[in-house]
Length: 414
Image (cartoon, rainbow, N blue to C red):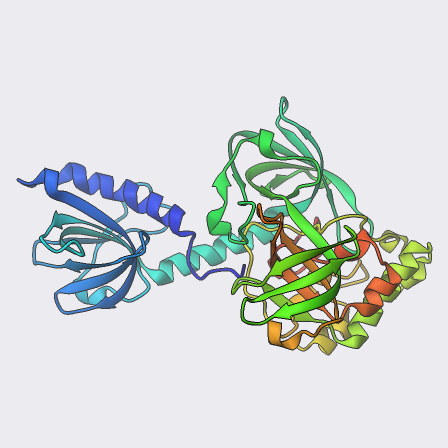
């Protein structure tokens, strides 16, 4: 899923609820039993009311009076110590609000006593800082070992070149989340204990790294199970937004759903051939094919699923052309190419751009009871890659999500 320009609604709701609790303690009314609340985003602003697209799915009109308290709370605050008063005319569509007020005869109207606001601009700025922190202090990879007793997780991190092991240490204050089995949304990630993390999962953590980069003391960990598919399209249903793909990895046919959150790209032929040459050279032990300067550090491709697993997926930057990304190799210096960075510069594709018989590589949700999966990342134009590496190593080029990082995974700027 592409990154939102807002924090996850559930997290915002928690912060707003905490702040609203302070208002509730400081404010009494003769009709406490009739006090209700609504959380959501402002849809429109009127002279004496606001319309809120509530998280419950309905629209709520909150009427404002001179007695209504309107307070602006910075993202991340747990109380109202740093809240500042707002005037009704300062409210804008897109602002996140929690409204507390008296119920009326109309089930969709609240007579607002208090409106706690997180301005959209504040949330976007906080989100940008959070994204940058995941880039600077994050590491991601494939889980190779979990020791719940000691709170340590070993991951294999790396790009197209050689991978390395990183030990992630989880403490009592570490935030642990896990993606829902059939969801591509970070918003749907739920708190989950360390015991739910399994070998083979994708994991990303941010925190404090050791000097040698071999360990990370995690502030936050996000994990999930995903499926890698590499094969050819057998049918396309544009009405249902689905396709059937013959998976060369699992040797079966799978129903793949495409949602508005799916990231779809198509590789230019030149880029696909360059990546294929690197994979083929690495498999044969030809280091020169993996690095412009023949560096041994670029010796081997990854053997399994995608390694770059950030906390929040983003809307790719498509301002650069694929040929530009290919010509630069998506890397600074002589390290292994950052394939995710190259892919992020490609224009977005759609289901209408795909054809029966076309080869694709897909990272998808782990699946539903029906056996169907939802595409997270879908890459077309991969025929040269599947020819060079017609096995699971080919799908290691893709990631469930990408932060459009400035460096290789596991480096100083993952």
